[in-house]
Length: 222
Image (tube, rainbow, N blue to C red; front, side, top):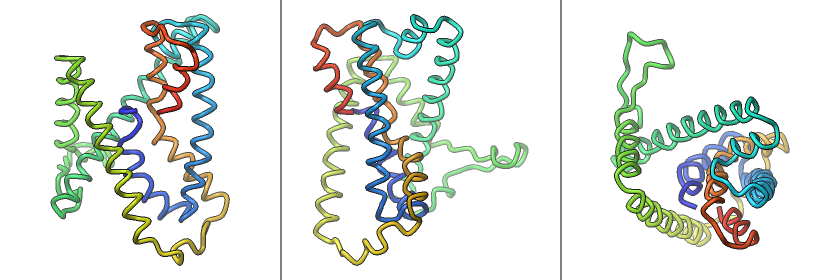
């Protein structure tokens, strides 16, 4: 749960509601959630049939051979590198909002680098270093921090939902889908990022001795 609830749901919801889907962003979450659910079923099947550590790499190595497993491993590494960078970058946005500043105020521009690649974010780099140190120094400690962060995230989400409902205005739901079905599916493609992380549960299959149904429920909780 800690791997899933994070920058995606907090940052992307408003962005996609404004730029792509409008109030129909709820439908976008349903579409991307159904897509993630299909992946969950696949991971559950593989994890039960091939209960080893390694996730997608291990499954594809058994089923399709080393080359396809190598390609999958590369994609997974790329996914987590980009995902980690995006989440770390969101910390700068949070901090800038807290300080009533623009996030660009905390970014350094290096003229010697290519345009588009010359924005350096020291806060994001610092967050990544701190998280890596916690993970390396103490697995149990990082697990506890993740557990606490997950609880805080859930509380914040519940607060936003309850506070939003008390201030809700039905006029804001019209038009419900200003960009049409195309906007709903366009937003769904981006919002799938909010579900990324559920696949990490399958890497614990080798250390799990519970029923498949319990393992499935753990994936669905993500």
